[in-house]
Image (tube, rainbow, N blue to C red; front, side):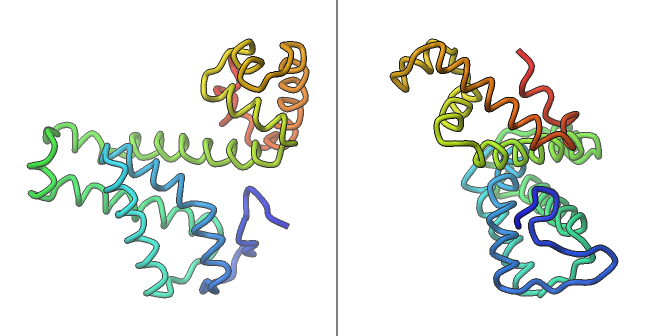
Length: 192
């Protein structure tokens, strides 16, 4: 069974070399959030995708050994951050964008990295939890997360306003239960 906390089902205190199947799970689980994370540094989604792809290729080619799910995540985010900073510092990229030395230095700080890591991990957790909702609830919540008001959701999906409210109530109850261990991270998403 897939777990939000341990999608690879790795046991603690044991080293792992990823199989092809585990590598695919790793890619499917983290690719989007790593691209978004990298994009916060580069502000260029295509370049961010290239950086993330480069890191995944490196993990595959080097047959990197991991000790736990946390070390996998930590390795990926740190590698992506470092590569993104290398890209920002490169002369070729500098000529393409107008980032100052101070802006790049602020991105190198641990607080910037930590904040971005928490945001991306939160987005990944919520996205996975939303994908497990019943279809109608999922559609309503995805529109709500995109900023649609209840009336706009009702019009878009051609349902009543009361149905939207009832389905959101059901969805939030299920999401709270699914994300109960992570509620501090995701609370800001559900605040009005």
